[in-house]
Image 1: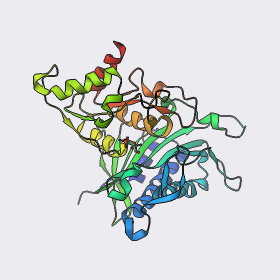
Image 2 (image 1 turned 90 degrees about the vertical axis):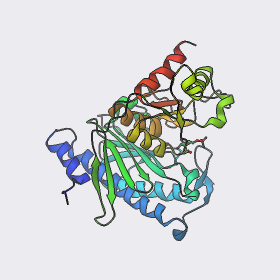
Image 3 (image 1 turned 90 degrees about the horizontal axis):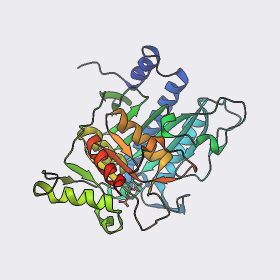
Length: 335
Ligand code: P6P
């Protein structure tokens, strides 16, 4: 049995050999990984754990919260507040930022997360996941404020997700490529199963919610229409479609075999740039995709270059195989 590399050893090597990450960041990522293990156990219990169904509350997005949304959020908060690596946290499930209580030592990092993305899939036993992004707090002595989180995706020091599917797999980048760690439930630890993940630059597979077609902008309609024309059309090849309605699962497929994922602006809510959230969905996923050789834009610019103005701001997302993303983006520029 080959002695596989644990997440701990991978992070120690990223810290020691490549001098890539400070010990504080390594320790923070270990805490996040342990939180994901706990969330995985809660998710896997399903009906047996009484954790399915909706809570009687709404989140800041105005969405009815699932019981597991709240459980996952609490797990991440409780595990990270005492560790001493963080100054504050922000979550899709909380309106404002969460300052680490004064009774605990303050760290130099800011942790942002969507504790359980894809909630609509929880009750129907389809893969869901936790998405996280790590920023550094400003180097000054003043207390952390919400504005300190408003950094572009290029400022991230770590990003990743944990997908709760047939396997529980943690996917992570600290800027040195993308690595995948599968949870070994017998050992109770994440084990390296892929590293230096690469996305093919071309693909025959697109992911979009087709029921929204009549609401899309012209460039997206043109791109999808050309895909649907198949061999006989301008693309000269047939395409396949996937839509899991769980960004973590769709992105994991793209990191594993290529493809393009799109949740574009549509005219149902013309004043909103898109459905997905910039800070704790699009930015971490965009860094992973770029680190694996893909591209991620909002149709007009690189997602990670966007200067955020609000903690929960939304963004149009087109990400995946580089040549496909560039094609859709070029259609926007011919507008
Ligand atoms: P729709 C899940 O609610 C989510 O935020 C993403 O994970 C997913 O890609 C998208 O929304 C699904 O949206 O409109 O197809 O249900």
